[in-house]
Every structure is written in C-alpha cells, then in structure tokens.
Image (cartoon, rainbow, N blue to C red):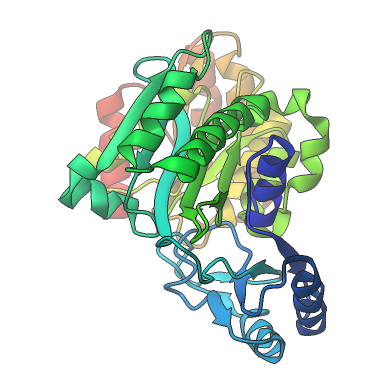
Length: 396
C-alpha cells in the first residue's frame, strides 16, 4: 500500500528520523494559513509547495514549486490544486491533485555547503536480507545515476535477525563523505531510518533527497513509503492512511470483492487461479502477439459469483478484445468453474468479446462438455498451444 509523502514523513518522525517540517492543505486558503503557521514554528521565509500524489517526478511535472513568500504560497497552491499532474510514474492522463504539502525552506545561510543525498531501504529478494542503498547524488533520477555512474551507488545488506549495526551506520556516513557533526547526524539518521522500515513492516522506504543543511543537520526532505499489505493486520491504524482516490478504481473494487487484480495496458483480459499460473499465462499472451490487460487471480474458490465479478471487472476495460480464462483444477473443481462461466456469461447479457477457456485438472472433461454444450461464444482449449493459437487468431 502506497501512502502520501506527508504520511510517510510522519511515520519516520515517530521513529526518531529527522524530517523537514510541513503542513498539508486542501485549499489555497489552507495553504496560506499553513505557511503562516510554519513561519511561526521554524522562522522560514520561503516555502516548498508540493503536490501530494502517489507518484515520483512531481517537480518535473510542475507539481513542486518554491514560494518566496506567503502570498506566492497561495498562488502556487491555487495553481497546483485540481491540476492533472503528469509524471513518468502516472498514467498517461495524469493524477488529480487534491492536497499540497507546505514545507519549510531548508536552504538557508550557514558555515558549510548544503548537500543532497539519496537513501532507500528495501528487501533484497535474492538474498532474503534487507538492503540499504545510498548515494551522494541525491535529488536526481537514481536509475540514471546507477546506469551512468554506478560507482556512486553504495549498498549494504542487513541480516534481519541481527539488525542494522553501528559500524554499518558509520560506513554510510563515511561513504557519503561526511565529517564532524554531519557524520554523527547521518549515523543516527541511517539507524533510525532502518528501524522505521522494520517497525512499520514496509516493503520500501525511499528518501530523495536526504538533506544536509548549512549547519550540518541531516533530515528527510521527501519520502516515498510502500507498506506491506500482508503485514497490515499488525498495524490496523494504517488502514486510515489509504487514499482510494489514488488507486485504480477497478483495483479498488476488486480488493473489496476479495480478488487480486492489477490493471495493465494490454488488450487480452486474464482470469487465472494462482499467481504462478497467472504469470505464465501473461507470458503466453505476449508470445502469441497479444498484450495482457490485467492480472486477475480469482484464487482457489473460483465459484460462480467470483467468476462473474471477475468478468465484470475485466469488461470494464474498453481495450479488452478477448478474455482468457486459464484455471487449474486442484482444490477447485473445473466443472464448478465451467458452470460459473456459463452462469456469469448469461447474467452479464450481451458480451461482445470472445472468451477463451482452458480448464485442466479435476473434472476437466466434464467442464469441457459444459462449455461446449452452452453454445455461447466461448472457445474451449486444453493445450497451451491451442490457447496461444486462439489468442493469436482472436486479436489479429
């Protein structure tokens, strides 16, 4: 589950991570009032007005502005709120901005030069260990840095049983070229960041930039947090952080129905049971010249109601040219799935797109007979090659 920057920074602060101070606002007037309050708290004269959407690259899309005074905060908030912000990480149509974060200015005069760093914590699935990734090139596209200057990307793996050790925190500060007060501040920052990652059961913490001020303070200026959905039962208060307006509406509806649905950009709808079979099915579609329109795992209880709900979700996508149902009957019986497909087809009324069905496993022969006798626009297949041929012929 993704959360907004201001929510992520609040979580960080609760674990002792130093952050830039900010106040969220929903209207230009609230933004102006937030700037006045922020000025009282921090003494800042300038402000960052930052669009709050679940996507990176907001600055490049015009979603982050530096205001030189309170009146300009109002003007920028008025400009950003309600806009369709398009970034490399949004859909082509962009995302509507409903909130802005008014943040303190961190560039102020001092004895040393301000610096921006990059830092993230995530799970290395190959080693089963957590990993801290950091760089001196903060504020930039980290993928481009890794491609062009990989020597500027540092990594440290952390055994989750042992935890993030003091010598690792010191190495982070050393690799970033810090000394004195900023060195000490960075060791505290890195340790607190790792503790926050573990403490909230996150799958990703990304801070870009981590900022060193001119008086050698270290703080998180931006924050991207992804929480592990599988661990939310341990953090029931995190459910209130979910912003459904930031999620794909079909994905929201699917989650409410207990289905695992991920919207994609292709033309072949997929209904499968089991994530592994779903991935193999999407590969099959690609090899057949098609493009998956979604990932939909109906699970091991693919009864008539779930199948009908799945069809309704897939058919809401206007790009879908055909639907591929690929079910392996292990726990679930194929004849029950076939009956569910026929019932769903009839309940949905007119279905303009052809449906390709491959049912293998328990009672597959009965399932094939049910599909064949239904006389609906449903094509039955047994072998993967048959499925591939049907997909190819349907979408060409």
